[in-house]
Length: 496
Ligand code: NAD
Image (cartoon, rainbow, N blue to C red; front, top):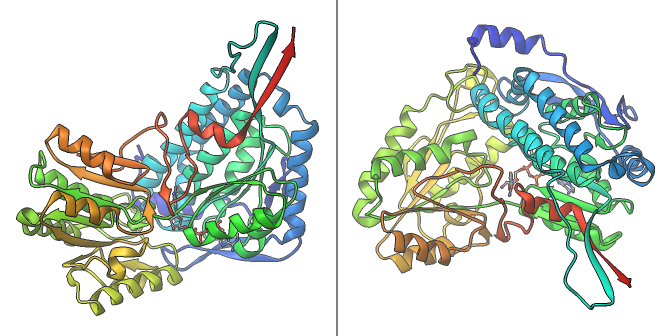
């Protein structure tokens, strides 16, 4: 628990020693001279400069990773040894939890309480979980011909390029890096240009925990230059990407245009949250719908951004969500009492406001919010926003907003609800509220989504995989399934 107040957190945030160099080959590497400003969306202030990597700097990082993989100790260590290093990373993340939470909050605007309690907890648990898993895996020796011994082993896949977004900069980086390292791979991590600082700290901290040089490299830079160079690099074996569907397409092209590296995509979403009239607790369903869309400023791939509610309870549920939206405390993300912080940038706020405008233009009814707020701060803040009477087919119904904007659509029958939920390009997650066990199973089976939450939303832990179907992607983060991304199956057939 963060046990200090707003003023003290402001003081500690100002005193942070923020990184300003890539982390390559186990050392800080200043880069080739070109840099960009890390700007805090809480007040528009420049936090510092970080290197703007071009192809040469990405090549330096990939070369360091290649060397670490091809001839360094990491892939050859006993898995238990690798696990111990990952556990030390988890321990250092725990020790530096406050510094890292403040850095995440400063760079991307989420409330510091959420950064500390949720983002950092997830990152710590991820390294701990894969550290503990590293030596619990077994290979196969199938029953085969009597004069042969067959072995099916999982081999580390090589050099992994990990490209991640800004909304959960440490959690999502950890979801790639920890299983890749547990598998014995070497990694080049390219964080978002909107959240480069916490990832650089992670790189330093991993080296401090005893990771050999070159096993985890962090390069900062813009997507179309640094991200592209990593996607096209012929010495990268696997590219694990989390981000928008549009950029996911680029990575498939980069692979096709280079070495056919394996590409894993975790992409966008427009998740439906279905409330049936027999929900066990309608007030809880409404409160969770509101929490889900406003948590992390709505900048969630899984945000339940389409509330599909049965017509018989639509008014009651929508009124409750609207009341919650109006009561939500939007404020300085460094204030531990703040419930919703700043959107990541002015440009992103402009895009979200464009979606609000489209909603009004398309005839949806604006029930709460819709305007920017806290304008005197210099930061990028938006009121929690709720539209109802959103028509299926409207932009607000189809397009990912990635902001605190809820679209409510009423339905009459269960088949209609399922058809509405499955409409569209995405298939990341879905929510369902019903007290009927058989309805829960039938609807869950019918929903095309990587995760279905029944009578809850955003619940889960490291034991279950996370990822999407349709244009929400193909890979799975978390759980032992994530190791499949970072390993290759090898068959050895021995004639006896
Ligand atoms: P984005 O796709 O713009 O950027 C993601 C990463 O790709 C960044 O590191 C960026 O620098 C890089 N990039 C951008 N353009 C590139 C290019 N042309 N070539 C190579 N790299 C490039 O996404 P974002 O704005 O950072 O994040 C928001 C998106 O991420 C949303 O669509 C959200 O749904 C998605 N997301 C998905 C998940 C998931 O697990 N499925 C989780 C979080 C966020």
